[in-house]
Length: 115
Length: 359
Length: 126
Image (cartoon, rainbow over all chains, first blue to last red; front, side):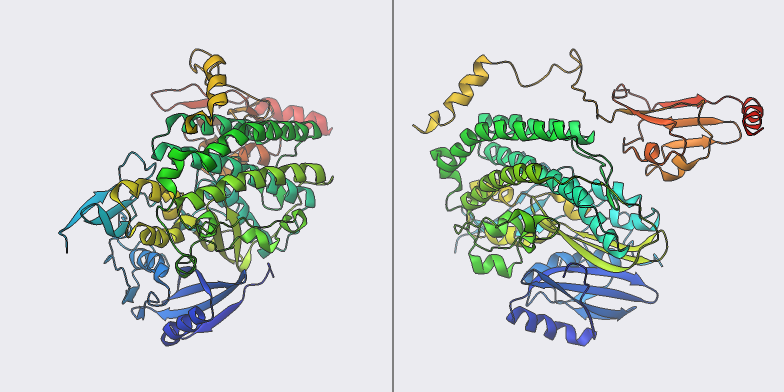
């Protein structure tokens, strides 16, 4: 159990529905992690139920936007604002949107050009 | 409807050791909404993976937080060990859990002191911190550092603890427990403590679960969530049961921590009694490849370490999700509807560690 | 009475010794394991540069040609990483702290010249 990485790749359009279903099934959101990969971003959403982790991955092509999951998990606003500030991914409909003013960095979106 | 006023709280405030800013929307003396903003001390530690080798990152992860340094290091090591398929010797696991539980005792004592300070009980604050000093001295004697230990390595630990030293730890902890009895009584029974904490910043069990809260913050609201109850490392052998309080207010959150100090002290005694003989580290070869997320129960709650390796000495991505990070939404919910004068106590009750949060 | 919950403890600290130390006047507590500062035994050092490579803060500079080993004291974080990785065990963690200073200190150690060492090594081989 502690050596597995349960990963499921989903389409960007499925994300909001997946989050809603998971919320209804009693999953807890653990984290959202963005990774820069060539010409795209990898967004890993982790959920937890009965102390077991389940990861859902969205591959988001450069320049595309994605909808926020804050309507199911309000706590996601922390990560989504962070990703918006550091990676420059446009996440729409965040419940508490800081408009890119969440993290103060010397240069805007430092992770965007890292690859 | 009363007229609304917005009062800025922080980033510089006597009760805050670290900068978090809250815009408090007030109606008379009541807070109707709190809007948090962080990001004053973003250090970009995660971006260092591009420059540092995975072995050097050990020292970076340790410096994420100045209080739960050991846990951060342990979580990172654990993630890398899984990627490299390393089996850590049993004695190393025992030593790691011992240091981790000692960290919990000192972190909770620090927090209890800060709570006392937040409502102006200065002498209680000083006694908590005096007691904490004993643990820090033990750290220095066993690892060489008081706060940052640099004792972990991938595949085990650097330093062994001699049987005489283990005996000394056991005696010091037993002596400390007696003194702590007196302090705990103050937190549990004292009227001035109760006046400032009972019924303040109440969050129901459902809300705490919906806001994904972790650690003593969640357990104070009756959510029995604790990574240690999976029995990872040696917690299964220690027979761990999470401590849960139903109150959901600042008092319940304090009570969880008061009791967890006792629990950790008992666990340390058990670890010392059962400490197996053997090697403390194994040699590690290879470069990490693949991805994994390790979780460790820090004094403040669950924290996650995501690593993604690509077979080179530099990792592709390392992400740390610290407990305060996910407790910020909980804080926002706890603040809604409280009195302005209670804001410092509520902010403190989630044990905020902003430097952790922003990494 | 609520205020007497910690009466015993308060009394003990009222009549006991202070829990704090007058630091600059009295020396700080030091244990056998304390990581204070790094010292080098330049005579056994082979100037391989591993410590420079491994140092997480780039505090160490090794000049292989000039046989000079130097450390920026204010950059060093006392992690013991260089001492662990040293192939000749020339680096040692001492228990005393570096003295506080208003300027950044760099300690430089000049190793013995290589000519001296080469015949000795050749003699050992022969």
